[in-house]
Image (cartoon, rainbow, N blue to C red; front, side, top):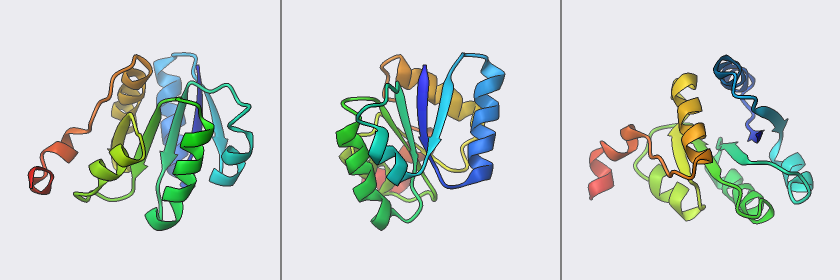
Length: 134
């Protein structure tokens, strides 16, 4: 399995990679900036795309480009803060799952594995916020 990780936070990236290694699932992690990923994604054989969103106004256009270039590869979006629009933004961008940056790496790995099995998990924190039902 090959995971393309587009994330600028080096510590967060390292923690996710360590959690993946501890599961010993044989997943290969390819790290790239959004610009690098846009360049090689149409030719890369990846099974999962994980994109960390920093400044959403800048990144959403990059996510749309990655989504077009990924040819149906499942997308997991990682949002920097908990806000009520995250879930709807993720759905609009075609994400299979949406999590927050403060999600424990072990839990994130379980979400990634569920996405690879064809599920569309939603982090419970998103559903328990009062603004989601409004």
